[in-house]
Image (cartoon, rainbow, N blue to C red; front, side, top):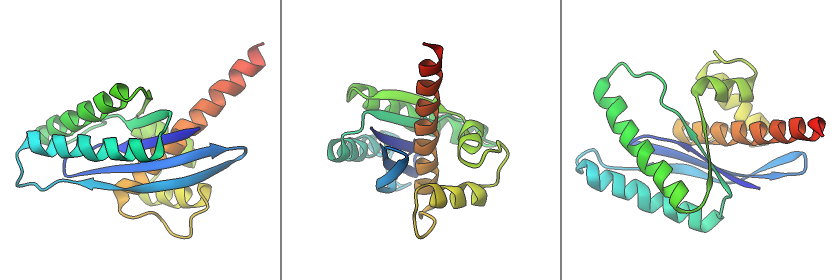
Length: 166
């Protein structure tokens, strides 16, 4: 199964693509979609949509895992990130992907085992879990990979529970 993890943003949207193999996760791709702050919002959202569609076309994931909005001190930021998140969810659904959403707390719990883990701890565990030589850069890409790992863990757990219920 191929999972696309997304860390939404208007300036930078992180993405990470992993493949779940038997007892192993393989990184297929990761990076960021960046938009120029001088562009108007519709153009920035269009750019995010187009580039995300290219990632989907290239890797053909079955699942898209998207981080939910948590808490922002700046109301303007939460609105613009919410707009980007809406476009991301629309593109995923429009491409026929199963959509999974996770809070930052759920991602940290799944990756580190502690919901209040620091960003560096999450990044270090992403590196370790995925067998990477270095922590993925930039941070938004590492966060997107963490969301994908969380999703894979959640799906695996759900299958184990269903298997035990039979």
